Each structure stands twice: as C-alpha cells, then as structure tokens.
Image (cartoon, rainbow, N blue to C red; front, side, top):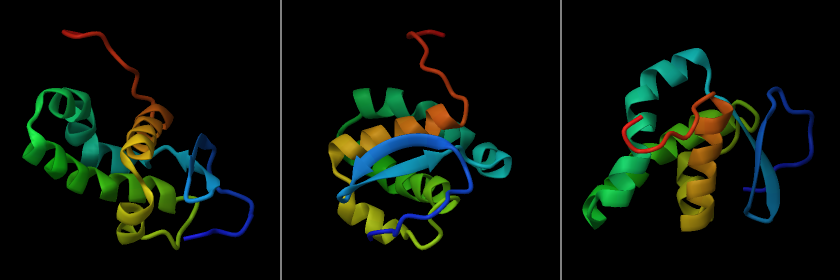
Length: 110
C-alpha cells in the first residue's frame, strides 16, 4: 500500500502506519453529511459496546477512513486498510478524520 511522495491536495492530520506517515484530510462536506451520525456515535459505542458492536463499528468506519484518505491517496482501498491498520492506528485514524473534519471531543453529556 506504499504511496510514493507526491504533493497532497488537502491538509490533514498525520498518522503513521504501514511504514510511513499518511496525511488524513477532512471529509468533504457531502461525505461528512452522509456519515455524521456514525462519526458522532463512535466513542460511545466502542467504549460501552460488546465485541460484536465494536467489530460492526470497525466495519462501518473503515470505509469512512478510506473516503478521507482517498482525497489525498486515490489508490488506497478499504480492503488494504483492513490489513494495515491495527487497533491503535485505527483509533488514531478515526480521530484524525473527526478532528480534520472539525469535530471536537466533548465531555459526557455534551
């Protein structure tokens, strides 16, 4: 999944995985709108959910991470992301997507 160095189209948040630093940009307005509900419930469902819920959330979020990454790296596939992300970098990547898209962490109840 190695990408050669090239000028990126969008600024973003760096996350290191698969032997290099990837710049994860924000989602487009359309992508953000279409995935807002899912992005909003990530933290709550993964911290309180059972294993099946966590796996379902990963299955739903890899395509969202892929949407963001493909804005800078058009050849990246969701299938590749399932293989190169681990639990740590998966969490970093989804936080990067949320952060780059303007979402901010909130305290419980906010």
